[in-house]
Image (tube, rainbow, N blue to C red; front, side):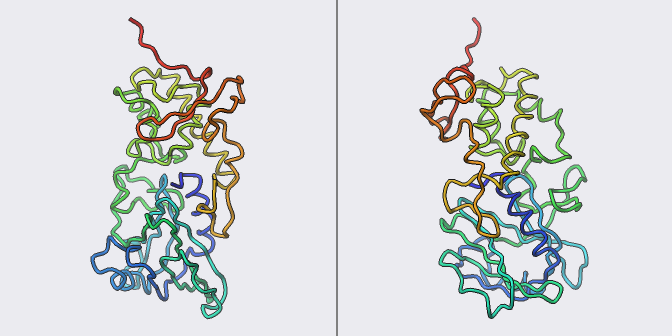
Length: 309
């Protein structure tokens, strides 16, 4: 599933292209793409057609477009995009009649108009776990901007329970460091809990734990304050580096809005490197399924926790 750097790469690519555009026509090519709307494609079109995309916003792995309507100049609802395992957006410039035929994995096509120019926005999803939805905005609990890309202090209803992400300037760092150190869960499970800090998925959790030299199964309650701080710094560092390289790609399922892959997979230190030597100490990188997730760590740098008797 795309993680924060991948989704931010998509957001940053879309914002200058479709921000301010008006949705002139929608075409849903697979009904399950809008499965959360009881009225299906018809309701999706009725809510989207004629709306203006005010911004392109992200929190963690979640992406949405606040919409304005003629009768309400301020956004009251959003077009939210859940990318699932393989969701992608592609932008085609030029007259609608000249747009290429939809890709076989295209699930929805939006015809947009921006500053007199026409463009086409396609939502592709090979594995079909992703979907589009139009839903109300709700105020943020702290009255601060809901996500990257807009100052609006609101988020989609389906995102209201999601914590701020590691790169969010409004993240309450002191609170995060306290909550990460509570309970008996392994620290990797805590990192993957999107209600605490969003945007850290399986790949970047392994990378952050490697950088901070912490074993993924170390109980949260056994993580010191200094370790928690180092772990948050590590998560921010690895995601910032991935973002600079356009995210991580292992196959053609993740690309940016121009159809280009990210290159951070070439810089991974732990994830996907089972059996290879650790770049830091030379010991073997190990892999096990922990909590149902493939997990990688260095056998020497990240020693297992043993409680003192």
